[in-house]
Length: 418
Image (cartoon, rainbow, N blue to C red; front, side, top):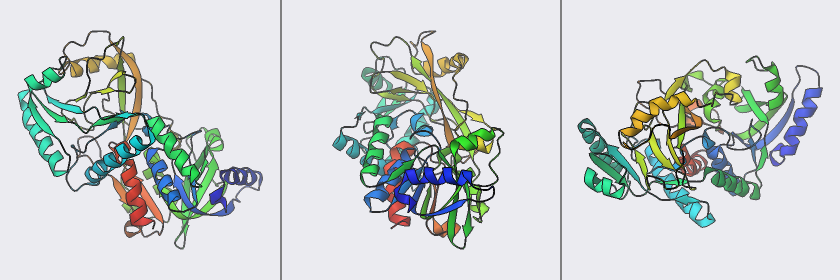
């Protein structure tokens, strides 16, 4: 069975490519996880620990090259999300699991705390609403403080009032993902990189995945998928954790009810770093009041003391499906973007000097709601939604996806796959 051998997948792909056009070899598998981002890795680890034969298929040359490595690396408390939402439940539970996991395995992380700040009178009621929401979500230790107290805590800060979250923190995402890969492999999971699932079809109640080598998909170069797959995999369990392309992939599952697949949108976020910072101006995470599509341009510290500002929200469109599958997004950061950052940052950090922001990196959020629409919840779909046994679709896993990753894995395996 191929589920125990990534080498077998690559071998089958090469063999199929040599065969006559229109023929794809068919192989059986136990559990296939599509996508090796942090959520896919957490699911793969959990399945493998439960004794399943797990195969992870990833289009990139290695794990975590998409949204999982292009974010703020923040461990969120669970403040922002509507009570009774999946985001709220998974964030609170995921934070507990994540801190425990990192502490036990000495993965670099820090529970450094966060200040959400109101810089104008109109923002103060919004801060109170956030505190109430966080308390309803079960976030411990939240405390409202006046501006003077917050500015004593952070002398470079300027604000009228602040909400302090002591359980917020930061984590080294690469070390976290490397650990998840290692534990999954130690329990028998196999990884096949440079392998793209381009679609699938239903035969009865069985999902047949259409698979090809990424390099062959890349060779098309015209935004088109190959007419025939190189390999068909028939797993008992499929977890679609393809991140940015998860809804697009589900739409390419022939026979799956398209009405259950939400629309997808992309929002780019840029980050800038603070130049020449021997002594970081802040010791805690500093967040403004959330904005449409994101949490506002905030201050993030990494574990090396680097100060980052971001992300902003830039809605993008016109991305063809193949580019989405292959993560061919424009991740460049123009220095000219800094002109939008300075006024936003100076609302709470007035001493920010001209010329001190340097282009950092960018990431793409997998959104399920359009601009000006209410933010969507995570979507976790099982058989009760789409009628396909063993298929789990994970849609819209944006922030707090990193924090929630282990809770999502716990939920998916317990509810759908045991």
